Length: 388
Image (cartoon, rainbow, N blue to C red):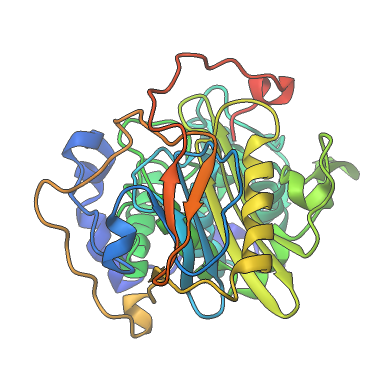
C-alpha cells in the first residue's frame, strides 16, 4: 500500500480551466448561474410535459416533477417528462463526483484522517462514520460514498484531491465535457446549497458514463461491506439503494445493477437506477416525487417495468449525448430566456391518459398541473434523520 502523503493528484487541462471559474461557480445563486439549458439530446427533450411516441400507456400515478427512461447501450431516450428541468439533485450528484475523481487514486492507497478532513462536512449530513485518527484505504472510502452516501467520505476524498474548491471546479468541468449543461455544482456531496442544480437528463448522463467504469459499476452494485471502526474492529454498512437491497418493505428489483439514490430536505427524493433484462440495460431517473415512503423507488420500478415491457415499440424522443472528449458533437445553446429551473413548483397530476394515433402516442395530463402542496412531512423515520 502507498500512503496518501506521497501522492500528488493528477489534474487534467479541462479541470485547470475549470479552476479559474471556481469562485464564481461556488458563489452564484440559481438565478445567476449560467443559462445552460440547451437543446442537448434533441429539441423534444426541451419541451415541457411527457415526451413519448409509439408505445403503450405509461405507468399511472407518477408524481415526480421530472423523469426519464433511456437505453444504456444506444443512448436512446424512450420517454421523458420535463427532462431538462433544473432541480436540486441531492446525493445523486455523487455520481458526478465519482465519475470525476474515482480514477485518480489507487484502491490500496491509505490515508489517516485528520480533523481538517472533516471540518467542513455540513451539519445534518448522511455519514458513514469516519473518525479522525483512523487510517482508511481509498477503496473503503469509496464504499462509504456509494453504500452509505457518506458526506464524510466525500470530503476526505475531496481533500485528497486537493480540496473542495478544486474538486468542485473539476466536477463542473467534467459536467461540461459530458454536456450536462443543466448542472451547476456548488459542493461535491450534493447537500443543499443555493444554486446547486441538475436535471433528470444530466443525472442519467452521469450514470451512463459512470457505469462504463468497472470500479464505478462494482461499487454501486455492492450491497454490504465491512467498514473500519478503529484497530481491528469493523462494522457492517448496507447500501441505501432500496431497489438493490430490498429494504424498507420493497423487494429487490429484478436485474438491478445500481446506481444512486439521494435525499435532502430541499430536494426531497431523487434516484437514478439501472437494470438489465434480456441483454438490455435501461436507465431511469426520477426527481422530486410526492414526499414520503418508497415513492421514488416505486416510480423508478414502474418506469423500468414499462421500459422492458414496451420500449421495443417506442420510437426515440431524444438521445443521451456522448462526452465532447470522446467525440460527442457539441450541443446548441438554448435561446436566451428559455431556461427552466426548479423555481416553479408546478408538476403533473397523478394519472396519465394516453391517446393513440398513427404517428404515436400523445400523453395528456389527467388531472392538470397543480401547485406543490406545502406539506413536507416525511413518513419514514430514517429519512428524517439522514440527508443523502
